[in-house]
Structures are given as C-alpha cells and as structure tokens.
Image 1 (cartoon, rainbow, N blue to C red):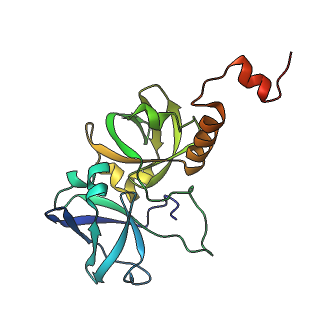
Image 2: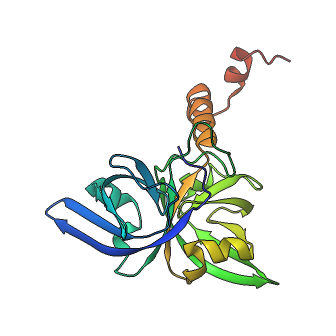
Length: 214
C-alpha cells in the first residue's frame, strides 16, 4: 500500500526486454534507509519489486502485462520517475490509499498557469471517469492529487509549486501519457452497486424489491 506522497524523483537508466521479459534500472540516491531486496516500490505509480540495489539505484523486473497497461514503455533513458516506498504500518498517512495497480493511461491535453499553480487537464477512458468525483482523489504517475473537475471525457487537477518541484509532473508536456489509478474505495462501491442494480438498470420492479413503495 502507498499514499501518493512522492519520496524521491529518480531517472530511468535502462528499460530493456528479452522476449516478453522486461527489466528496469532506476537511478536514485539519498534513501534514509537502504532499499532491501524484495521490497515493494512504486515507480510512477506502478508497484514493482526490488530485485537488486546499490548506492546508485535499483533494479526491478516488469511484467509484459504491466508494460501493456501502463505508460512505462514510453520512458527513455534519463526520463524522470516518481518513487515511493510502501507505507509502514506505523507511518503517517499523508495522501490517500494507493495500491500501485494502475487502472489505465491518460493523456495530458492542457496545462494552464494559475498564478504559481498549474491546472492540468487529462483525458482518459469513460470507465475510469465513472470512478472519479469532484474533490475526490486520483493518483497521476503515483502522485496523490485532488480532482477539481470531472467531465465525460477528462478530468482536472491542480499542482502547487511544491508538488511541481518534488515530482516528475513538472517535466510533463501536453501530449504526454500518465499512469492513472482511481480511488480503490470508489472501485469497490461501483462494483457493489452495479451488482446490486443489475448493471445500473433501475426499474420500478427493482425499487419495489428494494423496499421502495408507493
């Protein structure tokens, strides 16, 4: 489990494949506690397992499924990436619940300056947007952000200067792709409601069975 509070910005050293096996090396320094083999670490919101580490960075294997479902494959040598270690049970919960299981990829379509802040517009699949609500939470490349608007084809988030300075989002440009993870609670609620209502179809008979009468 993660919280969307980025701890370090690393950079891609290599992302290579042999058949369907992918291998990623990230350059980063400055951890208060050294990374340990087998620990979980979110890279741009993608939960990966550390397979080796040294004073210059770490390595991880990446599933073909992960490459297919996320924007990691678009990263090149030198690309900045957001890093967050898994949350300790006795840690401070600063953002929102983030699993590191990316739901889809969005496209940054517009960046607008509002004083020192940035307003970002991101387009994504309607299925993801149905799991979002204004003032709710969303993880963009692993960063916990508050939704300021949700439309049929896109959503907005704002970045304060601190977030820009301490995450890779400051280097994003219009047309770039972002890993999107919606609020896990919203997904579970949607699943239960759809199961209860029969794919969202509300009928008079259903209302009567549910206890609603004239």
